[in-house]
Image 1 (cartoon, one colour):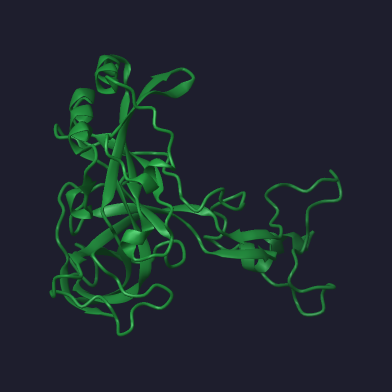
Image 2 (tube, one colour):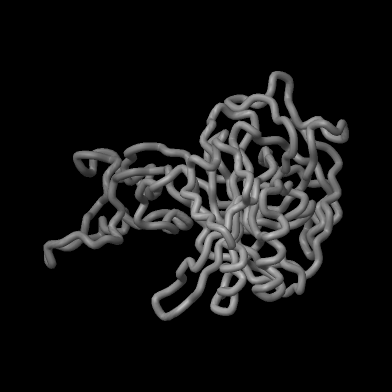
Length: 330
């Protein structure tokens, strides 16, 4: 029974189970923060992963040994084309959960987007929606982004919901109604120095064994038939294997949400303030064109993959400070 300790994963390896493949290339956001503000605001945007850079900054974190000193950190470049506000969706709530009460779409929707959705617009849809606002608990904006706007070859757009928070339901509905059919840029939702959560699908690695998948310790040389297997699957009785025992299986291509990613730089390639493109462009992506942001740290997923950005849901600071950027090494 002493070999059972071999199946204990390393610290930090146990986080998510089961580790199955994601159902879609597009990550889902299931929880949204509530903003204490009288002005309504859309809480999400998105981008496409382009590559990584090094950021040289002055560390502005208080009560740290490196405070006030030069700090070199990893940065991830995301191309953030404008998103189109397609429609408004209102949800009511009862003991069975959330129920969509109405969908109101913009009048002039591009054909390549309109063919991806079932338009339910009727005459007087706005008036009908306004009459039902009394039973609505949450308002969402239906947004669409085209990968081709980021310089990618994919033609099919991504369409998803973005929560609206701040003020009452009437103000939220009016805010999204004014934006129907318009494009909104990343700087209309977030600002430099703000912290966001990122949702994405991780890199797929296929079928992997327990060493790679769970971080199980290798067995001693010649102690068993194999070295890269679990030391014990459990006791003889009861004759079953617990779900907690690490097993081989699918690794990667999982949906993950990473919290508290700070926006270090927000800019546009048409301005010459920051040289963001390396010579020849980023490997596996190419040249970044248009709006972009640089997030501190890494981001899940491979290059060209959709990354959803959500307003910070944990540990939201009361004040946003802009980082002191000294240099960006591409």
